[in-house]
Length: 75
Image (cartoon, rainbow, N blue to C red; front, top):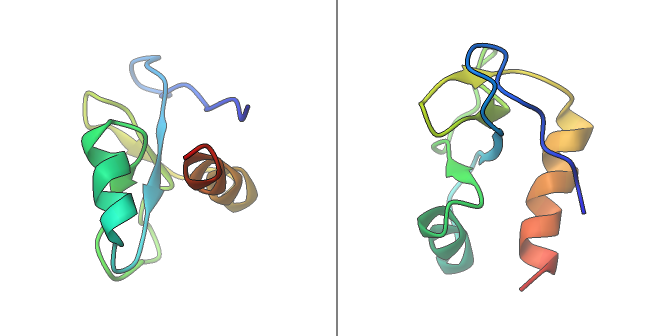
């Protein structure tokens, strides 16, 4: 299991932000709270992680991608 980072503002567990056109599986994962849909375009300062309070932050892209892959591998 991938350990998700804590929000630097509030300490809640982060959820990875998925950038790009979401698949039906991505919509389902977002509804279950496993990831956040971040839109189709990644900007220079787009967050890699978001907590349930809505705080977003950047971090390791490798960890973000591993966490997203783990969401889909678990199904």
